[in-house]
Amino acid sequence: MTEPTPLTSDPAVLVLEDGTRYEGRAYGARGRTLGEAVFATGMTGYQETLTDPSYAGQIVLMTAPHIGNTGMNDEDTESARIWVAGFIVRDPARVVSNFRSQRRLDDDLVEAGVVGISGIDTRAVTRHIRSAGAMRAGVFSGDDALLSAGEQLDLVRSGAEMAGQNLSGTVSTVERYTLPAEGERVGSVAVLDLGVKTSTLKYLAARGFDVHVVPQTVSIDEIRDLAPDALFFSNGPGDPSASDRHVELLRDSLRDGRPYFGICFGNQLLGRALGFDTYKLPFGHRGINQPVLDRATGRVEITSHNHGFAVDAPIGEITESSEGFGRVEVSHVDLNDDVVEGLNCLDIPAFSVQYHPESAAGPHDANYLFDRFRDLVVANKESNA
Image 1: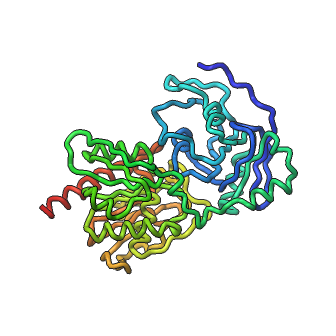
Image 2: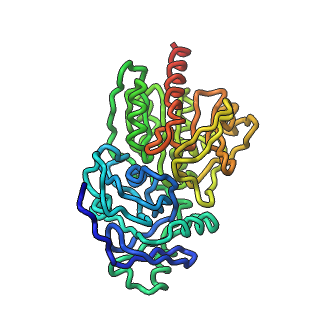
Image 3: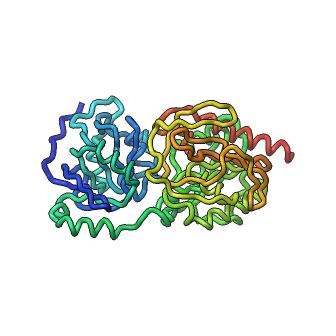
């Protein structure tokens, strides 16, 4: 057990773009940070949340009141760094007591330069965001806490809105790399890194795939030269309507007949490739307790989410793709608000889900989707043999 961390008395303030202010204590690095304020409903998994590239550009509020009690380790990170723009907690743990812990959460926040705030009523902030919607925000501490309320609000309102942002280049790998297949090899998959999580790559390798992770700048000619048996689009931050080049890449690959699986951002891009529109949700889905209906089986899955945009596709009917890819159906639906959570193509080997089947952290109800992808790739290879 580590020595207790003394509570700081350094002031900090959270400012929302509608002028709402919450005063608390500095947490993590001192200074200022700007981003989109969102809330994540998981009672655990803060380390996975912090290191999920999908949270780039966002100030994340944890709805669980006590954060940091299990510390941080090198095994549960979902990428090589912390990506959140800022961090909001109610009660930071003063004591870390877990046998897997290697260091304190607040130490990692300081090292990563993540400005945070603690000691505020996170329930009140969550209820406000649920009513008013996700919005631009800023956290100010240190010298920036001394700025006037008007100056702080002007800084918040000068920040970029999430709508229209393409953040793939910020989070994607620069160099291609490969994870070898584990066990019986069934083929290879090219993973377009739009902010991919480590757990996703491990699950694909565990299904017998050589996993070739490629940067978001990859061209269709480079994909063809790589000659993978399938294509996978990962999760990631930003607005899918700002990713036209990735949509065209996917359309070209689908025309080549290559099986496709996409999650989260990859689901939104499949929707666009098929001819559907996307739209911004009022406050998004973020957390590890979202109920989703699998319309094919009637089974309800408890799933892990992190998305602020969704696909606008008709539920309960089969639609003809306006881009010439045949029949499409909505495969999964969120039971909280009827948001589309999955797409299934009936005439080409492609499907996607809006949530995170790797569930790091979270329930593993949807882990079977990696098996479904493996079966799809095997069946496609056999039919083309």
